[in-house]
Length: 136
Image (cartoon, rainbow, N blue to C red; front, side, top):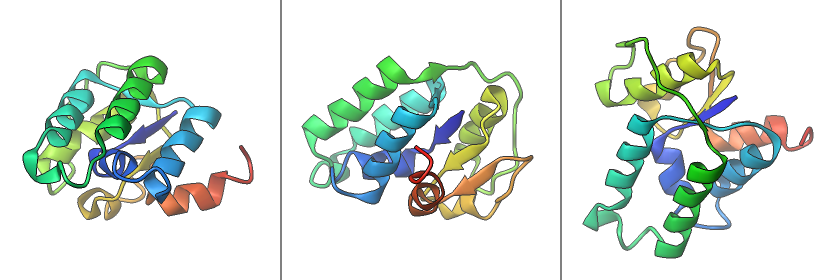
């Protein structure tokens, strides 16, 4: 099981040839991607921000959201976590904990500094790809 944070998924919706998009598609084909209502709500809200409109391609945004809805494995985190210095990012830690994820893919320094966290490896998209592309 793997978790993606909002920063990486926004990157995935920004460029089809970018590393975040490649990492996201790779995970969908080789692993199971955990999702939660909180995580999906935050992603939708961030992707709708007008200041991101010039970076996010509408068709790619819709594709990422559709793939998460169809292929994501839903979890309802039950344990509250307050370990991240940015409280908004705790929801990804909660999802990782609830899903038993071994990896959280992030582009956010507030999460990356926690690596490893309770047995969860927190990797940049490029690190995740470097470790897993040969296996998938």
